[in-house]
Length: 394
Figure 1 (cartoon, rainbow, N blue to C red):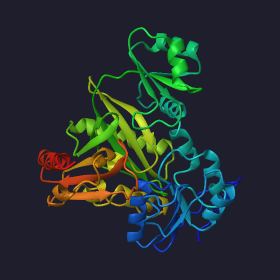
Figure 2: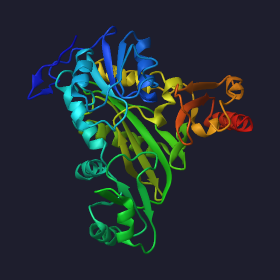
Figure 3: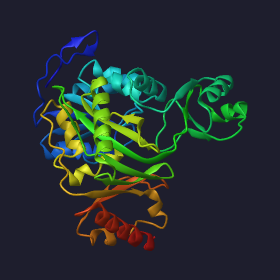
Figure 4: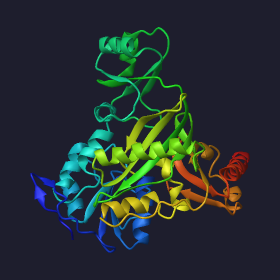
């Protein structure tokens, strides 16, 4: 079992021995991203252990071992770490103390500092600004008075976001016109926040990059993303933008991945502004919803790529095999019981992925469908046919 040399309590990546098939990969988190990582790992002959507070999670259904204990249980975390060769994570909301506990025993990839930066908007935006990456103007706010001053500097409209625990549009308040900063801050309910200038963007896109233990970086094709109610609805690949925009997005994403010294994956979300420029919106140091198309439509999926990176293997090809559209399946479809999947299963170009979640709720991601075709326009027709068929059966 690999045990990297320790330095000041942190694993030093001075020994870059690869972890070959047959090794044991540990995953912090038990959701659908961990599930698909586990599927990729099992296919390649790895054993997989997941650490997840709730039993019978999507990842636990696939893994060899599921450990159910709180992220505050240091003894359980250390026992988990001793049973694996390397540790990665599948979502950001893991306490820093939990990462430090396992990192004292086994390599964690990406490193804990990457997680620390990306799980907090203040640290993330500050990193981007200090390193010269394009992002919306922002200010850190701690009170109604600092909010008032920030709005004077940034102007209106603007958006107030919580520093922590924000995804799928959660923890955000759009500010328009004259506002009562005292009332807004009182309703906001968080001790710190970030105010950003509202960006009148024309589109959203993202790039998932992988960086290996040897420093090699590869990028997946950029995804054109369409959101509904702040939740990703469709990802379209190839993205329907000028080649210069796609190359610029890939270049920025690769440079951020390098600057963060990532070993693993980094997803970079962009706004395409009305003027045609790119602004970084968010970072995610893990597989990304907008990268799910790669499971079916790329030579190497983002999940296999994460595995390759954290195990010190050569990175795989990210070649797109066919144009593809991915559609997120939300819990709303279960409002009258389990959906009838016959429309999806009757479409020969469609791939259905369900995450094994026991409870469906409106807005909860329950699965996704990918349709591959000769063109994205044809793939969109296939997705719309599936959507119509499912809607008619609920």
